[in-house]
Length: 223
Length: 406
Image 1: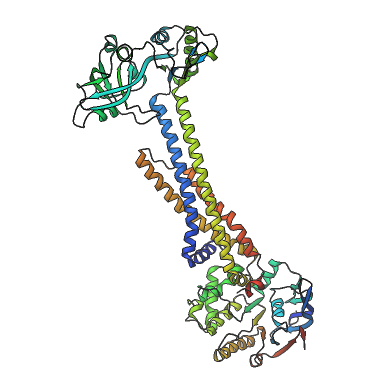
Image 2: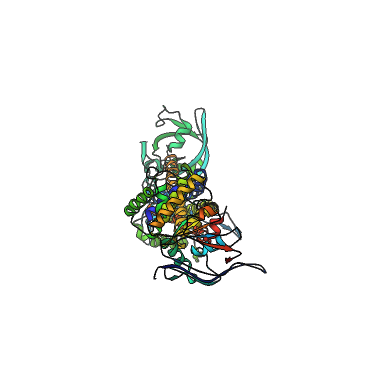
């Protein structure tokens, strides 16, 4: 795909409630090349969360096309979308979204479970990933025994579990103290250096500064 | 995802809220438990009745006087005076009756019996010596009525064990004692072995010679029943017909519909009894099945609650690549696990209830594997049926809605 990972063309999203039409995204087009580290910035209500959902194959656009790694995501069925989310996208959420009462190791294993990877392989890989994010001594801890920063690292390890085409991070440091936030951002930077494509949504300029390119969004349009 | 992993995850999820899980299981436990207990008890009592048929003799026929007519007035059933000693003799001697081995004419009445300061009101049955053979009476001590006793109108009595315990204290040997029946002295010559409870209490009765009962005690010339032993089980219908036509002929009746007697086989009587037991069992099982249904609705309720509570988790799992069917499997596994474990506990409790019943009632304890298999199948089916809707609901959640849910 000549290095183009994400290709968005004329993408719009309209929410209809009764007789009210709310156009959240209008006619957005951009490309993200393989190995880029892009931040999508904008004030609240700018449509960046909606864009993130569409990029993450959690939602479909009303019109326009979204091509991820050569696959036209805009016309997929529910199960095909699930497959894309599993294999092509690694999510890092603002509120971590780890399974409660489940060890860090088992949390990292979840996406591999749905991909049907054999159990012994799952464990090895999850262990290595947790080592990479610096949590080798915490692999059996449940989320409530970990700090915010540590929980987000588990989430990053989970996002890497299936070697996804892109890592999609939604305000990854939004709930984390500043000193730990920088550590998280260093991990992203390191991952990007290793060649991973990262798309990050944020409204904080100093977090966006870690990215190599920033797409600004306002009122559903790129500015 | 592997089945083992699904089960492991489900156990972990169910263990989170132990109280709720326990209560949901309890509904199924009660349902399955009562079904198992009642079905087993029903089967056991049916078997017990069948065993009684064998014990009493499946080649036994009983003739009882039917409705008697005086003019156009219909008398009470069974209260007739139409059966006579001559009828019994005729059956015994007739060349037309080829299928009957033994004939036992009987007269039964109730009266007061006194020994010392004890008294009881019991059945007095006038019998001939053949009675013991026809009814498979065995003696605990002493001997039964003989034909000499009948011929000489002897005042001798053979007691059933219930009468013995009513009249005598434990350390008195009743044989050789004298009791008063309706003011007449009778010498006790024997005590029968217990026969156990059948349709009527076989043990609460006193046997005396038929002639003594008819002529000296009750002053009657008719019989209350004639018991017949056919030569084999296979000729029961022939026997019924031969005896029936002989009696119709003797009673000068042309039409079998106007017969003033009834011939019933012992098997007929007990079949009626087991039908009653069967009806009762199915009725109770029906009630138990309703409680099982209520238990199933309880499971559904719990599962729906769990879906609502875990909306975020479902959203996350979908974001991480779970397909619809994988979410359905997860919730179905949880539901089936609930009902299945409820089923297992229910089977154990039901069987112990039935075990206690069999100990108390003195019946045999036999486990019906069919009912256990059925209970397993039913509990799994309930899990699938009542887990389906909540699982479907979970699987249809939109991932973004679910992730946003607080």
